[in-house]
Image (cartoon, rainbow, N blue to C red):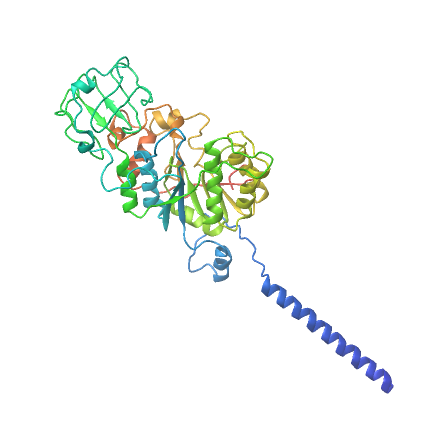
Length: 442
């Protein structure tokens, strides 16, 4: 058996070395623990929403990661600015149905309308009543044609001149649009007397046949929404940029940039007024699991008609910054093309939702949705962005319009909201998540 003899000096050297090593290791571990405590790693979970459910069998750790950073409340935002040539703004029937669809199908914790002017309808009575109209007689109207509408003189409506009338079509006066009367639809109006105008209400004016006059007063829609806790938030209509280009070109660019400002301030969801929620409950699950939800358009760009995001989203921050550093006057460059590009860069954050902003597609293929029935499948989508201003059909201005003419998919969508219809059973094989890098369904 060999014997190792260590001198007293060598023993002390080994002890000192071991002691110093232990101290160094302890220090490194301490620093590591401090850093990780101050800056915990919180990887963004990219979870397939079709299989993501907070069920009992899902581990608590998975649920915690999925919800880390997600807002506790879902706030839905709308934006509407007053055009420079208008005296006020209002919400029409289809605008009202958009918000109603959210209340029915999305059930947000709060709905906010942002703009520079609160819509008409903030009072408890309409701004135009019988006391405001008083007398509209044949002396004031006589024969209403395109040639002789010079002015309608009443005690309530002082002067409605040709400069006030946006358009007067045909000798029968199909539409007379003024700042006081949104729409006056008549049928061969030869004489309008006080006996014909029984009352001006929130809906229409009942009159005796054959003379018919309908005055659409949109004040009632905003009044009803305010009573149901939809709140108006004043927001300046700001065109200023901080980059090489100093001013936004169009008011719709102001609205688009404002949407991103809102998401950075509040988080939640921003929607256009021609978006109608269908399977809106799925949006909550999407935004619980993903910092951003963008809306697929086509291979060139996405749509800003429906966008959701967390306040902490890197994609939303970069997207908002783009308006200052690489703003383009093109209609869709910042709102659509850059949205698609940033969705590719921040693909770990984003859920690109399909069958919303391309069903129907705004660049054509609208006729099957607006003029036919049963051609467009929409009942499995989280929402439908109709783009109805591009449809070429007569606008739906009142509930009665939904029942006129032949059925269409567009009318079915609006009737689903207006009548609060039940949806058919969803397709269990329906998929709506697009891979932002490949442009194909996941």
